[in-house]
Amino acid sequence: MNVTVENVAACRKKLNIEIPADEVAREWKDILKEFQKFTPIPGFRAGHAPIPVLERKYTKEISDEIQRKLIPQSFREAIAKEKLKVVSMPQIGEVKFVRNEPLRFDATVDVAPEFALPTYKGLKVKKKKVEVKDEDVNNALTMLSEQMASFNDIADRGLALGDFAVISYTGVCEGKPIAEIAPSAKPLSENKQFWLLMAKDSFLPGFCEPLVGAKIGDKKEVPASFPKDFRVKELAEKKATYSVEILGLKEKKLPALDDAFAASYKAKDMAELKERIKENMVRERGNQSEHDVRNQIVEQLLKAVSFDLPDSMVQAETQNTMLDIVRENQMRGMGEDAIRGKSKEILDFAQQSAKDKVRASFILSRVASEENVKVKDEELQQEIVQAAERAHKPLREFVQKMQESGEIESIREQMTIARTLDLLVTNAIVESE
Image (tube, rainbow, N blue to C red; front, side):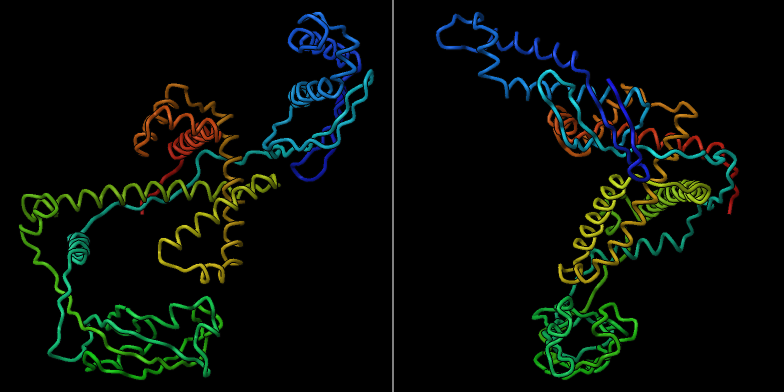
């Protein structure tokens, strides 16, 4: 087999592969024998059809079978021969195949970049001291009580700061509905049932103050000014007028922080609940502190070395990152129009994030190779079992799906990188803040 390699672009190579005619001829002969065994030909007993008859009738099928078998086989051999670290599926180009001649084809692939490893041991990092004060615990208790707050209807007085007003509103800017000026800002244009927290700069700057004292059924014209740095660029520095109707008035009431409150969280009293909250906060802050140390190590490695990246990996990671960002924004309640309005910002962030992630994975994989960091099969199996349990899926079904999507090796890589980072943390010079 003859192989020549062309550099198409950074991290992309084109392999021109030629399979000798005698090797192709042997394969042709072998495939013909298989056809003779299993292919019925009228007028002949099974397995006894003449070879020339089979060749005339099934030339295309035999040719297709040869290519199906020899192209991937010779591609793998060429990769091994040239010692290429391929990171993408091959793109098979033109295939040239004529009977009794060599089989020729080309394959374009992305390969791992070549670079010199930077110093990765003895990196200096800062680690935050984990500390939880009584004030932190009390703030957490307040957040828990907010989650159990009740909202009582009030009908005998006007709105006051601190209340929740249930309102209906429509907004007009420059004589047009706001949605016409900024299609991505439909929620700012109209809402028939909106809960407004009566507080300074709630919803829009200065929006709540004109509503103080209003009662259920009252209608108000409320002026609004969009600031210079407003998130919807089409509305920045513009003025609007809102027609507001008061539909309801609600007063928030927090539960008492007593033993009954603690019991609702399955604690015997407030002392136990506070201790549990403190333990959770210590654990969470400890995990965050460890995460910060790892991020510092990765940032230092990224700054220490630069190299080209395979386009296919960057594009795939960019797509995944964009999907994650969109899903996260949707969960926060952002509409499709608003997300579409931020598409360039999302794309720019996703591309940079993808490049950093791909570059870091190559550096850490090289470190893992240098330090012989490996994940045993039984450790991988244990991780898969735990992943299936977390997903509440039957193990067999879960494993089959992961095999089909190729995720099993991805999990091994993630475990390897995590262990490599553990190694770098162990060998880092850690300063406490």
